[in-house]
Image (cartoon, rainbow, N blue to C red; front, side, top):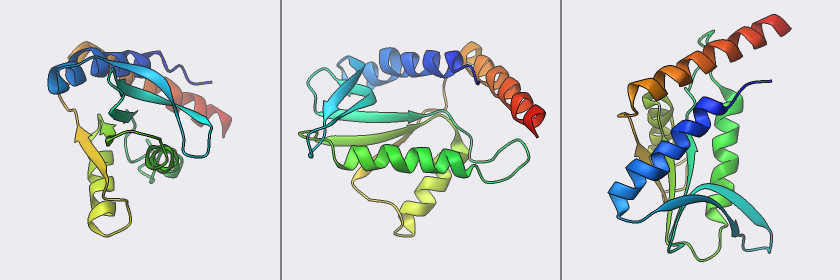
Length: 148
């Protein structure tokens, strides 16, 4: 099973550094109520509860240069919950990879993604975190290849 430690470190950095500086408030991973009564755990929620975001550290393509359909579906599922969260003014998807960001901008521009979800691309992740993410991807890629 893939180790998500590197991804979790990047999410923590995004909350503690990027979002805090961008919005001048702190962010935490937190569960919020959905319109039908359930809860969903969002990657970043502002302390005042007006902003909710999910974070994608995935590239758009697999190591074999195929579309990452599972990754796309994960982002679409996250979007479903963003669209149905209660009492949040700003709903965001945060991308750390340019190709995934571009894919969803393209979808939105073609009318295939809800316009009320804001996109943020964060491409200034510290090098040590980015290197850890790349190493994690390499291990996961080897695990998948070994299963075939």
